[in-house]
Image (cartoon, helix red, strand yellow):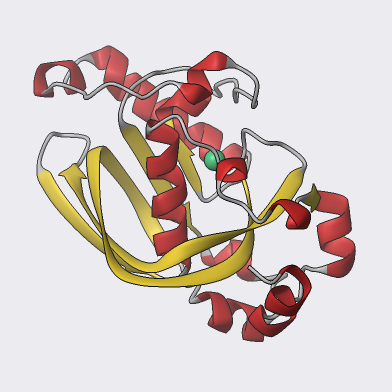
Length: 195
Ligand code: ZN
C-alpha cells in the first residue's frame, strides 16, 4: 500500500517523533507501517523517508539509493557528491554522531517539500546507531551522499526540514534546477551561493 506523503505546513512534520519501544516495533501495525514506507519511498521515488512524512510520529527512517537513480547524473557530479548506491536500510530510534564536521554544499530536495530544491550544507561523514526492524542493534557509518540522506532523515524526527538549514537564495523550483543546476559541480555552487 502507498501512503500519503505529508507536505510542509502539516503540523506532524514539525513535531519530534516518539521513540519506538521494542514491544511496539514487533506489532503488526508498526511492521506494516515499515512495509508501506518502503513501498511509498520506491514509488516516489526517493532515497530516504522518515515516518512523520507518512503521518506517523515514530522514530523510524529508511534509506535506499539505487544505482538506477544515478543514470541521469554526470559521473563527475556523482564523484563530487560521494554518491554510491546504498542498499535498503531501516533504522529505528536512530542516534546520530557527526564524524567529520567538514561541510559539503549540494542541492537536495524532500518528498515533503514537493517541487523544490535548495543548497544545504551537510557534514561529510556520520555514524548512526539504532535498531533494525526486528529490534536488533545496528550501526551504519556513512559518508558523502549517504551521510547527507541520514542527516536529512534524522532532522525529520526532530521536526526539522531542510528549508531550516538551506542557503535561502538557492531555494528554487525543481524545473529551474533541472534547467540550470543539475550538472553543477561544487565550485559553481559555492561561487553562486557562497555558503
Ligand atoms: Zn525529507
